[in-house]
Length: 497
Image (cartoon, rainbow, N blue to C red; front, side, top):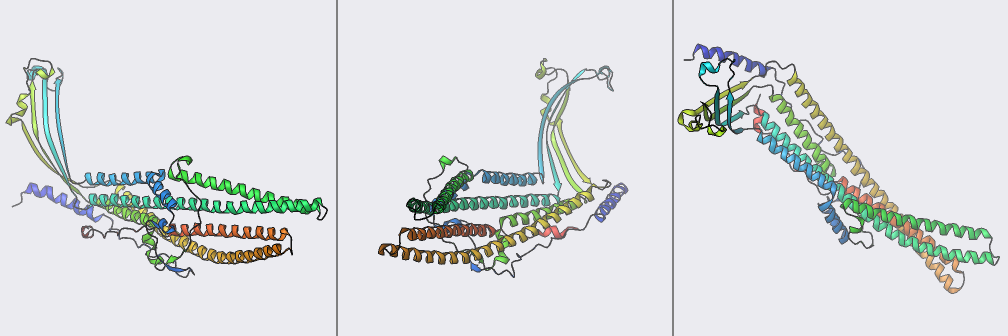
């Protein structure tokens, strides 16, 4: 039979418990997130496969493989991303350590003189100094009935997953930058070879023009025009040399080394390009982009923070237990320079044992609106995370579609340019034939060669631009990243009020 005193204590506690539950806000439902990228209706080529994690190996360039390996091993930006992941993982450990059982040990010895004018003067107790020794172990356990600690641990874990996705995004950005700088250097070297040949051709035309002016065959303006074309070729040559050097400096910065420490690079032909969107790009793009994955994990973390903020409205129950030894003695023990008259040896006697157990119930009664404000902040952060996710999806769709359209347009332009190069080759061959037959002088052949070299230079520039677009499309498609599956909410989360 329940005692009247227990009912007097239990009834108000039960009333406060019911009142705190009644004022708790409703549980926040998982938000609706954009499941697909809005690519429908875009006239983009489809049918290719998704890029793999080591997508750069498809270009079959050992020099690029070496640069990528060095960049992923020693890039300062990637090291910073790794540090963020490590910090997020330690936050998970910290959140998990703050929940559940906690055990603390303590040991202290003190010596104190009593005041002659205090509550208990020495004349009354018979001594002026006393010694206090305490040894103990304290146990504390918080019962996570409403999932507050679990929600915080889950939120920290989702933050760590977001940091890992951001690390993948940083690695992809570095890979894209390395490949773009390297292919740009190859293009500069190829164009530099063509411009050097064009400069030699223009210098031959310059000599012929100057000779004809000297003999009075042509007006001096023809020599001035030849001089202008030579100066333009020299300027283009200088610009390409500077561009090639700048790209090597960029590669060194990306690898985090001095330019002299770069691996040896040898000019070679630019690789082939076949940029297309995968057939299921609109469906899988949200799971293939590391920045979208990071935004998704941020949403999951914010959702769990709303659960933790809501759990603050409910009472907490904890259990604290204490076991130890305690002893108070008068006199001066040898520990403090005395003669041992007040030894603390009896602290280890059975009579010095101390035990205690303290169950505690904490109820939020009046907090000035802090709990509602904290819950409102968590809701606002969740809304911001959802908006950021939707924006990331739309941005990714626009970027992938734009790069695919650009790749399609460049393919058309390259085909047209190749037709011009083929026509220029035929014109140059015809001019060479007429020169050998003595029908025309060398000017026609040199002019045809200069025009052909210019068309070939434009073809190389378009090829480099197509490679840049191909790299941008690979980055827009996530560069081989695949988001781990999002865990479904824990069943206990939906069972709580």
